[in-house]
Image (cartoon, rainbow, N blue to C red):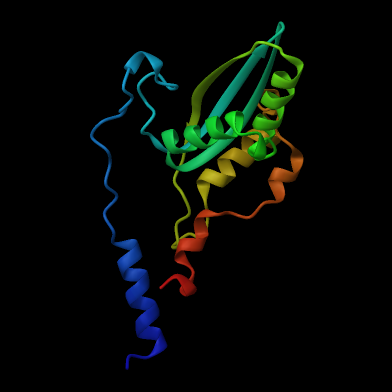
Length: 165
């Protein structure tokens, strides 16, 4: 039976040496003209901005995803359709407020930054730090975000925990 040190180093070696496979395609939408990011929906590790335009007003929300943007986009769209998920994010709360009023609105999405996720060697998640930077230093870009999002812990570090071996 190997000792604990050997198990930890073997785990660290396997996690750190996994090749980062990049998708060859940047979009797999059925109709490329309906892609939310103009052909970049398969991009991963991004900080994105959603803009909601309604009644002459424009409100913005900033979020992040370590996976492909398209999976995060699907979660947002599900929270806009399913009333049980209306409080999932600040963006979905705002969209449901508009729906309850009967107001028409349009949503647009764009990538505002790319960053690396948590690295076990540096013990830092540049992706989470980049999102927090925009919330603190560029508040005009994220009107819908709440300040309590700054206190949340990085979710990307959990895959490096020993309990996941």
